[in-house]
Length: 392
Image (cartoon, rainbow, N blue to C red):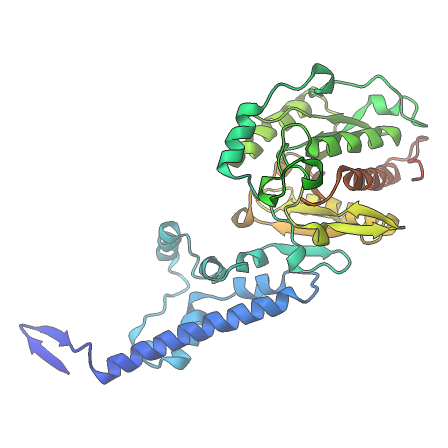
């Protein structure tokens, strides 16, 4: 098989041992993908309260993967050099060049198995009947629609624009002068997100976006309800002038400016709409349909643990007041999305998904009222005052 010529070894690639090695290699690879895909599908059907599969796969190292292959391909035991744990430089170079982490098989399996990347999101707290198929998903409008929305965008009417620092003069029901102190700042990073039933002639979920009938209307209702309950709220309604992938940077500047103008602000709520369909984003409570609520916490900032604690509080309060309305709290790193979501600015920041593409404004308004009540009760429990939240 081997012939030495001028000190070089020639390998006969058509030999039976080489062919056998390649057959075992292909079979071993196929078995890994089949097993992983089957396990992922089964896991999606089971309600879970934490990302067990995420923690399991994240713990696998390159040594483990090679060891699994070596069980089927004995040749690997002697021919493949397994990197040592102290090879930090070589691992870093590999990750930078390929965007694949040898210690995390999800980084390359996710590209081969559709939907596998979904499991990178951790379900911190799951609502009733929630599993991995309920995880909120952000989706951008098609490029042609994004360009059209940008071209058609017109300045909002002055009376509809709420700039940071503006204050409402009206007094809330039963709240006295308390609402003059603004505690909540509401904004909409993806302000064009809308609901299909509200858009005439639009049937495709990928095109559920609009410059006028959109998630901003839900955020305004949330602010109005908070005011009624005695908590002052600023609602920023202007669209952010940036491409989709730069919107969080644009909205961050607005939040920072609002914080500079008003040191009394305590809560920062970024209101979104999920991309899931109606069966995943609708709950019936006391005979009325509500748009589900989901909380997303980014881990790419120093405040994520405190923000997650606050999201848990709001979820638990919603479970107490409106059982089943909240889908839960979901944790995302930068690998699964923005990961920061402007939540580094405050330990009481919320990214809230209200409903999905098939919900209506009526359903979303009900959920906004429920969310306002939950936040108000948490706020007044922490800061007792005469103004108490009204009953629904």
